[in-house]
Figure 1: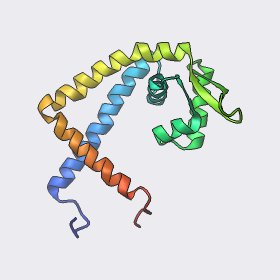
Figure 2 (figure 1 turned 135 degrees about the horizontal axis):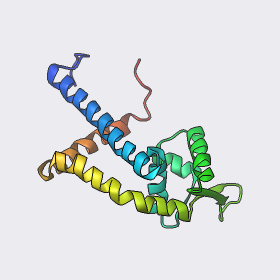
Figure 3 (figure 1 turned 180 degrees about the vertical axis):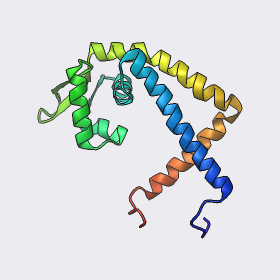
Figure 4 (figure 1 turned 135 degrees about the vertical axis):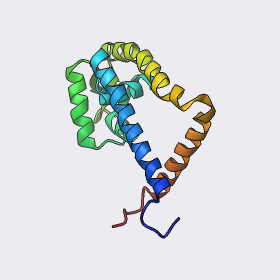
Length: 159
């Protein structure tokens, strides 16, 4: 690692391009979900996780761990989703002190309807733009960043 605290020109261009790509891609993907299916990016994320769970249910804290959301954000968002009929709270069969978040039929229908279109947009706007010859390189780079972040997650942020 360099002792220079500033990014050089190449590093700065790469970093800013990454930030712009991430922001604009997320905006395009989630505007489409909202416009076409009435789902926010947060709705979609929760619905995907629950739909991939073998039982279609998870405890709220487990959803929080997967999404990396704060407890209050998760609670508020799940309440809004429950009001719209996408999920419901049920007593946990193993420990009735806690509630499970359960994917409803309406929630399953919403993700079943939205997912193919979302995947098609990811393919068109990201996968095809990156190109098959660079996907492995991109995954390797992303995995390297995630590994580095995992090593630093328990360390205090430098001031």
